[in-house]
Image (cartoon, rainbow, N blue to C red; front, side, top):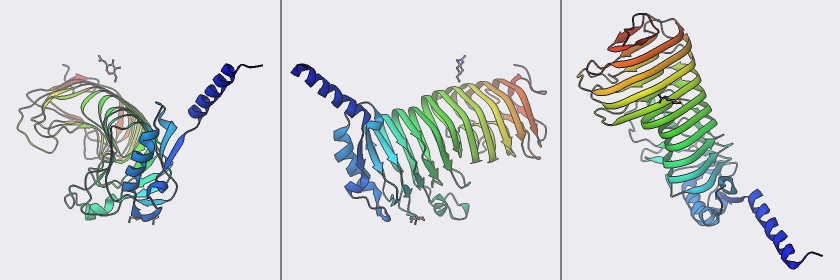
Length: 373
Ligand SMILES: *[C@@H]1O[C@H](CO)[C@@H](O)[C@H](O)[C@H]1NC(C)=O
Ligand SMILES: *[C@@H]1O[C@H](CO)[C@@H](O)[C@H](O)[C@H]1NC(C)=O
């Protein structure tokens, strides 16, 4: 016969196992949300988070506590900030729509100072961005909303959710995080970056996206198996006019397909920027009619006053195939006279439908006409 001690131990173990396997679901429908595409989802998200999620987070398994948006149509008409968020899962099964509201500004969903957050689908967020840029005019509502921001967050995973047509940037990630297996689909109007990433050791893989942009500071970024559609390309920068202390290092893109795009891969800065962009590798790119397949510009947005000391070095381009445009170079390096681009290495570049490559203040290897350093 088992002693009471053992029975107690078994019950205790059973409880632990049950808790580890089960999860707690905090549905927004229990906190004021209505799936009528009219009631603002914002307050219900906040209430469900404060009253249900926060008190019930007991483990470090994010999927144990869900802030749950069930299937249905919801209007997100106000911004929500989850500050000091840890160890939970925003699970969006429904369709979330942004209204067109000229007064709406900021970021719709912000996670701040967060750790171990999972944001997943199978739902979608529809930004209705086209309504904020009538006729393609980006100046109409310059403060139009952005979709999602992870500010000072680590161990964030964003996956399986689809983001459509943000009025401005789709996902901003600052920290050490992973995004994978998801889509971002934008109208091709500009300033609607898919992912803007900075921080250390971020990893974006298996996504179909408008573009993946690396911002400063970044040390360690890996993007793999990316399909870029209607894109401004895989960009590093710009860093803003007059930026000092730019620091982007150890960036690696591989297996990227780009179509309907302006640039293919671009490093863009201003002639007055200062700092370092170093050790960047692009490998395995397939481009379809890219306006500028491979482009480094220290004169992004014009300007010729060449006073910068931004050092762009050790950039490798490997195995690029596909097509550019018949009026532009396949490779265009336009660097600072004061601080030339150095060690720019090319191999396996086979681009069609372009004019001759152009190199200004750059040195490296692998293409004819490029000076050795
Ligand atoms: C929900 O509302 C938004 C914004 O008002 C609208 O664009 C969208 O088409 C609506 N969705 C449905 C399914 O009616
Ligand atoms: C360059 O960056 C890659 C990651 O993209 C890293 O594995 C490698 O060690 C870096 N090389 C140097 C010399 O720092």
